[in-house]
Image 1: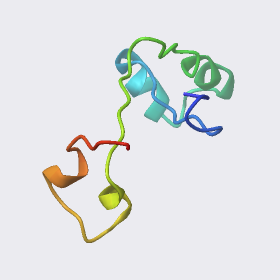
Image 2: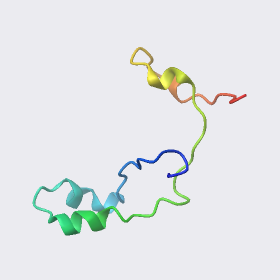
Image 3: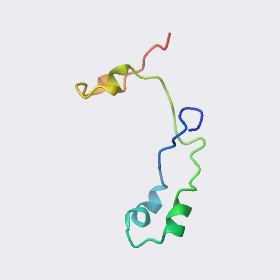
Image 4: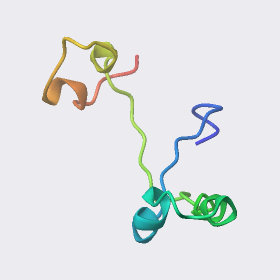
Length: 68
């Protein structure tokens, strides 16, 4: 993720969702939930500028584009 942006989104492991969303989870445990390694689990591809527009809806946002 750091190759794309300096602010990495929080994507916890699906098994950790309940603990992550529970306000009673202690901060130390919540921090541990962020250690999920996403290497090899995400795919990246260029998309059109339509994803930045609130007017755009539907498949246009995820259709592949030629970056050239």
